[in-house]
Image 1: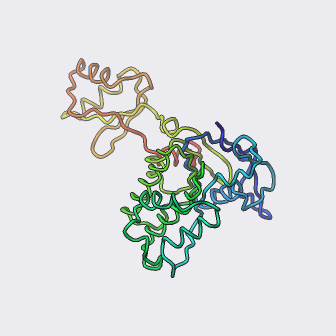
Image 2: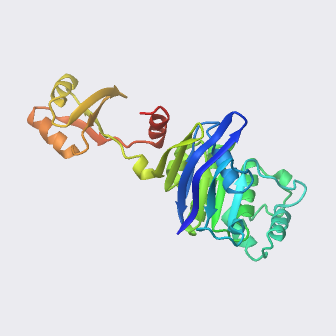
Image 3: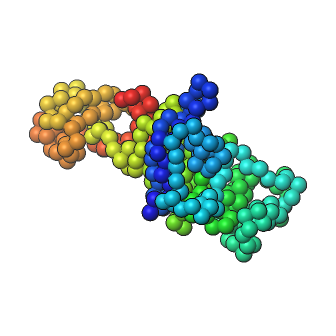
Length: 295
């Protein structure tokens, strides 16, 4: 099922084209990471699909044109969470539940999911930034929404806090929820998301499964005790494209069909015994930079 579809969605502020003809769709159960440098249109895009910002052109639809107040099925956490600091975490959640016309039975489960059971009755002003962020995620989940939207959910957190938020998002995804998440932390998108949307200057430059975006040239890290002989022999291997030195190892790119076992066999035939051979896994950061640079 398609939960969200945008068609040439655009937003202009005076002479600035913040988002330009953005067309993409999100299916049920996907975890979509929205990536892009500052000013690429990530937050504006989220604001438009949530009805906070009116598009200049184009349109979007939720749940295949469901007209029965579809945003009631969407939870969101945009930018810095707002809480009542002199109230407890529990009281803040009760207020949110009242606003959403939701019952209180689900709150205990949400509190446990975000790891706040021991502090839920303490005033929010005593919470760390990570705890406030986890409380905000629980608030976004009240009412059992089908889709949850996060804008930079790990912004300002230390590595431990980032890991906590990542695990919570993974738990939410495991419940079958659809997640749309803007982030500038590429490694978190790579670890968490099934799909990725990359923006540059308000335009989409890539959209698809993370594993497909990471599909790369056939690159291997190779080493031998006789570096000179290796470098001479490697250029004669069928499918060889180029090589460079990285971390004192030879990084060699071959055509897609070339296998590591075949490389090892052919080099051995040429009198080269390898001390190291491994296929280099491409990182999302590499793909991101290549796409931004138009390579």
